[in-house]
Amino acid sequence: MLKRVRRRYLALEIDVGEMVSSKEFMDAVWNAVLKLYGEYGASRTGLTLINYNTEKGFAVIRTTHTTLEMVRTALASITNIANKPAAIHILTVSGTIKALYRKAKK
Amino acid sequence: MKRIYADLHLCPNLKNSEQVLQIVSKASKLGYSLIGMTFPSNSTEEEIQRLRIISKDAKINLATRVDLKPKVPKELIRNLRKLRRRFEVIAVMCESKSVARQAAKDRRVDLLNFPSLDFRRRFFDKAEAELASNSLASLEIDIKPLLSLEGPARIRLLSNLRKEATIAKGFHVPIVISSGISDEKLMRKPRELVALASLFDLDEASGIEAVSKNPVTIVKRNREKLSSRFVAPGIRIIRRGKDC
Image 1 (spheres, rainbow over the protein chains, first blue to last red):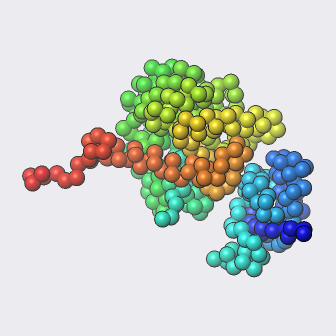
Image 2: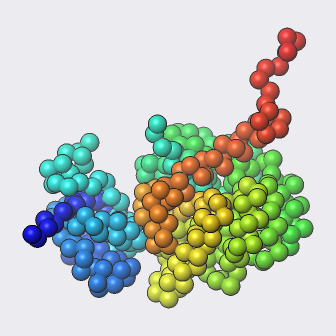
C-alpha cells in the first residue's frame, strides 16, 4: 500500500527592509535549498507556498516531514532576497494548517 | 526547566550605541538569555557598565569577552596574566600552531577559535584536541562564514568543520556554536544555528548543547571564579564575621 505523505507547515517571519514579492521570496528559498542540497535534495522537499503577506512579512510554506531539517537549514542560510539583505526566521512548525495558525497567533 | 540559550560571540562596533542596542534587543527577541560581547582589551569599567545597563534593559545577561590574537606563546601567557581577572570569557584566535598548542593546554583559556578563511591555519587536530580535553578549553565555531561564503570556499570550510567536530567529539572537547556577527541581519535563532550546524554533521542533541549548556557552563564557571567569595574550585566563602 502506498504510504501517506506526512507534511509539515512552517510559519515564517521575513525580516527584510523593503517589500519583496512572493516570487522573489520563493526564488530565494529554492536557491538556498539548491545550493546546499542540489537538485536531488530540492526535489525531495516538495516545497509549496501556502500563504504570503508582504506587509506583515509573514509566510507559510509546506514541506514533507522527512526534509524538514533540510528546509530549516536552507532557510537559516538565506542572507538576501532579490539582492536586499534579509533573514528568515521560523516562528512555528506544525503538521496541520489549523494548528499552525493557532500556534503562530500565540 | 527552561533552557538558557547563549551566543558568546557578538562583535558590534561598541562606539556605535545604536548598533549595540539593535543587536542586544534582537538577541533578546530571538530567544537568547545570555550574550557575550567582544571588548577591546583596554576597555574601561565605565564602558562595560554602560553596556551592562543596555543589556539589562533588554532583559538579557551580558558576559564580557576578550579575543586574544597573540603571535607567540609568550605573548599569550602575558596577556592571560593581565586580562584573566578582568573578563568573563577569554577566546584565543589561534593563528600559529605554537599559540594553538599553548592555548589548548592553558586552563585560563575558555575558547579556541581558528581562522575560517585560511584553511592551512586550522590547527584543531588530534594533538590539539587531546591537550584541550585535559584543560578547560572549548572549540568555538562561528556561523558567520557559513552565511557569507559561497561555492568552493564554503565547501572547504564545511569539510574542515566536519573533521574538527568529529575530533572534538572523540576527545570530549565541548563545542560552542556562536554567530560571530557584527550585523543584525545575520543573527539567527538558537534553533537555526543548530540547523546550520547539521551541515557539518553535528547531531541535534550536540548542537543544542553547543548553543546552551556548553557556553552557559563557561560563563557560570568563570563568574564563580571571579567572585570575591571564591577561594578554590569547590571552596567558597559562605559567611564572614566574628561567629565564623
